[in-house]
Image 1 (tube, rainbow, N blue to C red):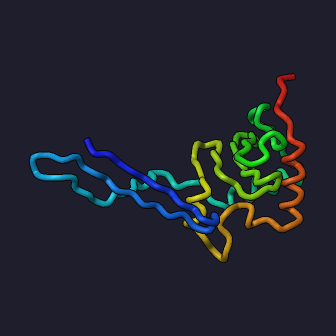
Image 2 (cartoon, helix red, strand yellow):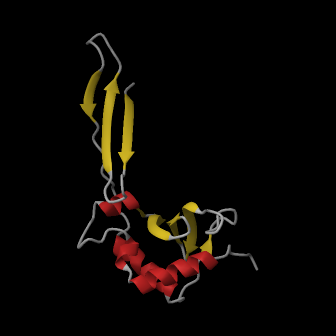
Image 3 (cartoon, rainbow, N blue to C red):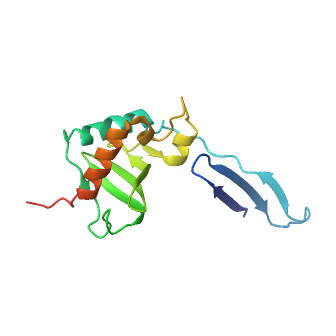
Length: 156
């Protein structure tokens, strides 16, 4: 059975490098052999940055409600790390970097498609890769303010 080793490295969140190697155990053919790992292609297209930007703008304009997914993982409690929100069927995870909104880490669309930081980094167009990069400074600030105030949905 092959052993698969996958390493990810992102020095300044500007790019992600994937180094992957499959190492086959020694057999009667000889010692360990190395061969490049072939990444499987996704069957469905993922969520694009633009789709997420539209959802974020609805939040910013307060046209739709959104809630924290976990009451034990609020913006205030998670000083540095991922905080997940539910937005009308979407799951959006933001990275809180020392109490500042840094980037959208991942999303799950209502139809089950996903999008992640590393995928969007591969789709760089006009210097924008993360959905937050597509917002104005004012929109970014308003979104951060709303995320800090977000509550967990109560069943009333």
